[in-house]
Image (cartoon, rainbow, N blue to C red; front, side):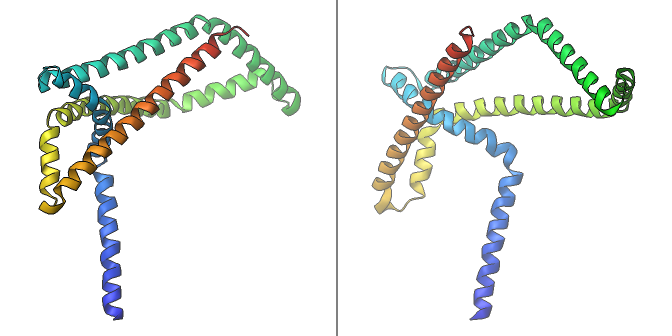
Amino acid sequence: MKTVTLSKAIQVILFFVLVFGGLYFAKPFLAPFAIAALLALLFLPLSGKLEKKGVSRGLSTFLCVLLLLIVIAGIVALLSAQVAGISKDLPQLKENVSKSISQLQGFISDKAGISPQEQQKMMEEQKSGGGGASGKIVTAIMGSISGILVDTILAFVYLFLLLYLRTHLKSFILKLVPPENKENARVIISKASKVVTKYLTGLGMMIMMLWVMYGIGFSLPV
């Protein structure tokens, strides 16, 4: 009895190790696929309405992807405008930072007895010693940006395929279900897609409302 229990425990542990190990190594594929799956559920009602109006599935899927691109481009343009607005105040920010640094140097000079010239020399030595580290940081940042671009392209490709081949995916899932449970499976799939779509739509509306409210609040004069 103990041998059987121990064997089952080892099998369970091995199962979890394989599952989590597989998820870890499949992260480059699963991360954009999961994002694409959520976006597909969000755009599923729009694609269905377009198809009911006589639009082909390929064209409706392309329009959904194009709409997502337009939304992302609008967000990027809005953020760029905000950054441009901040850059106009950059000289004033630099002046304020310089004053704060001067005050900090004076405080250190009074408390620690280190003159501002010695502090400046120490900072320059630290900068010269950290050149290699800064190069590594820049390389890591560029690698992260390239990884984000690749994941974004993969997410768009997966989104197109999930919307265009959703009938085949549903048929594949139903084939895995016993014949006597196929009708229940259809109902569950339909209800699950509706619930997830409503949840994501409500979450998106809440984010947009908070964005507008924060934008209005920060734009008001103090």
